[in-house]
Structure formats: structure tokens, C-alpha cells
Length: 517
Image (cartoon, rainbow, N blue to C red; front, top):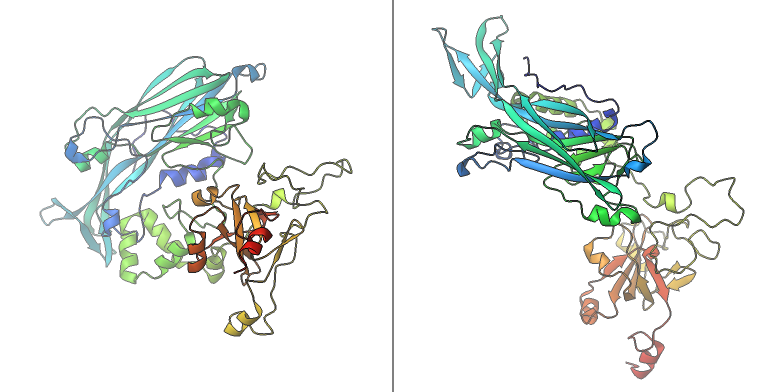
């Protein structure tokens, strides 16, 4: 096969290799889904993300919108080192659909298109493949707008199909439609920062009458790689205070920019059709792509291992990349599979004493700022000798009287109603009042509790030694019902601030005296 050559150069710019793994994951997001077979219903409707459809398409073609655009921020041009030109290299990446049609050779020498051709017991299928396209636009100056038309040629390639004796029994015809697009850039100043807009539009001229015609004229998995020279990108997710307002005015359309590359670097941005975080990474345990960037490799690998030989054969015949997945999963050793089982890591390690101590620091220097601390918490730092940090303590363990943890008899030695946990030197148990400061992977519901006063209903410990504090909100009118149902909210001890008894609350000494029952 000899893929069509884009008019624009495809040599990747120097320095982008460090983000190519992530960019490839974006490129093939949804390319082919488990069980990786052509007959699977989920693989009959493909190309889920980053599709730029033809602008002139009939309603019945269900074509995607033809354009995408993103805005990102750069540091002020005045900060560019002397003798360095401020510019940004723009790289557009996408897939070009390639129709793979299998044709059977007839006795009269003609060829008949077929969905499947069996050759020596092996299936050869008709299918829609894709060809990677990468177009580097070179350095884009930040002083004027640019407008760049692009053309990717169509083409046709023919590959003969022969049996084990070398006899030709058919052929594979691969066809690609010509693609045309346009990339525009423009800049504007916003409170001293440079706002760079990059837009990509499909400009296919012909009318797409049906779904097949529309997808063949589309740019699939479209995304952008931007690399700055002489200037730096500003994070839009966590902008510095002076850039927060300008970052808030950036607008995105089907493309979201994030900082890419090594953590802390600010020279590269990935504009993706899926929302990512800054400096995204592929887990080092991942053995290869499974075409789902939110994948859990272990689960998908185990699912592949449960496929029958017939299902695996169809997947291998569906697409060369599917064949790679099946072969990789089949070749996995128990040790390889165990590697996918995951690991435990402490997201708070850098903030709580696991970072190296600076030998040059002053003896009484203030400890580093805890990035997870609630600004309303006036307690001393967790490493201060006056405060006990539960992360540095031995795991909580309740006496089970010698019974194994899984034995119901072990519960007899555990009393969530009377067990306590030390927080900031204060014993917190059932009836204690605390203020909630959600921090550990807090979801939207947890954040509603921020700053709220709650009553502890139990202190529990799991089999791994983790401590969990059950709460009800003091101001919740349904608190009694939650108590009755045993429906509580659970937080880690380091998310709670012990409080003194508050007069008038259900658990204050004053209230208990007035209501002895």
C-alpha cells in the first residue's frame, strides 16, 4: 500500500516526541471498541470523537459539524528573550478514512466485491480502515493572522490475495477520498497576555448525500499540537492569579487545550476533542493501546482473554490494529497481567513530608504550604510536633480477640459507637462536632459540605487499616431520618476539624441537660 502524500510536509517538528503517546491515544480514541469485531453493533457506528464533517452534507448523512477552534494564552511578548522570535509551531493530526474492499476473482477474470473471503481457512474482511495524517504548518508568528489551505490527496491501492500455493484468489482494493481543509490563526492581547486562536475547518466542496459519503470526506480524530518558541503557554485549568481573568475569557469549540509534556513544562499544548487535564500521561503499566483512553487495561485484557477462538479470528481479520491487541493479550504472562492490577500511591505525599528535606533551609523555617489545606483551617501544619498526622501513624487496628478479620466474631471487638480517632490532638468519637473540609477526591456533593458543621455518628476502620468517620450535618432538617436509616456521609479524619460543643446544638451539654431523654 502506498498512502497518499499530503501537500504539506508531514515531518514532525523537533521536540514533540514527548507528547506523541498521548496524541496517539487521542487520535485513536474510539477507533475500534471491544470486542474489536466488525460484526459487533458498537463497531458499526464508529469515529466517536474529533470528526470534522463536510460542510455541504444532506440531513440524512448525519455528518458532524465541519469545524473546531480553540483559544489558549501565552506569556506577554515582552518576556521573549533577546534575539529569539516569538512564534508557535502548529501541527494538525487526524485520520483519513480508507475503504478496504475485498474482491473475489471470478473464473472469467473479473472481480466481485464480497464482505468476506476465506483463504486457507483464514477470513479476509471488507472494512473501513484509517490512515494517519500529520501536517506541520511551521512557525506561526504572533504578530499577524495566518490562513492556510490544506489538501490531502485521495487514491486507490490494489493488493492481490493469494493462497498457500501462491494462486491468486482475489484482491483487496483500498480507496481514499480527497480531503480539503483550512487552518487559521489569529492573536489578540488580553491584559498583557496573548490570546491565540487556532481554527480548523473542513472545506470539502462536494455534497455528501449519505452517511458513507460524509465520513469518507471527514477529518477523523482531529486534534492540534502547538509548540511555543520564545514564549510560554499559560495553564487554562490552573492559571496564575494575574492570568485568571484572561483565561476565563478563552472560548473553546469542540477542542480543549491543555499543557502537555513533562510536568512543569509550558512549551507545548495539546488541543484535543476530549477534555483532559494538564500534562496527561499514559500509565506506565499500560502495555499498549486499546482505543479507549478512559480504559481500565486489566478489565479489557481479561475480557479479550475470554473471547472464543472464532471471535478472536474475526477480530484479527477486522483490522491490523485489532490483531495487535488480540496477539498482545494472548501473549501476556501472569506477571504481565499482574502488572496491570494497579498500585497504591499517596496523592498527598509531596505535601506531607515525603519530599526531601532541604539541608540549606533555616532551622526554624516554615514548612512548605499544604496545597490541599482549606484556607479557613487555622490549625498548625501537620508536621508540627503539636499535631498528630494520621498519615504518619500506624494504621488503626481494633482488637478482634484473635478472630480473623473475615470471621463475624471479629465484629464483637469493634464498637463504631464508642471507638475514637485522634484529630489535631482531640479524640473524636460518636457525638463529637466537627467542621468538614473535603479534600480527598471530593465530588460535587462533598463540596456542598465544605465549611459545614457535622455530628459524628460512628468511627469505623476497614480491613486495610483505613479510618472512616460517619457524619450527619447538624443543620440538615433530615438528620434524624438519616440516623434512623443509618444513612451517613463518610470522610477521612484529615478532612475534619474538631470543634467544641456549640450551645443549642442537639449534642451540646446544654441541650442534653434540657432534654435528658
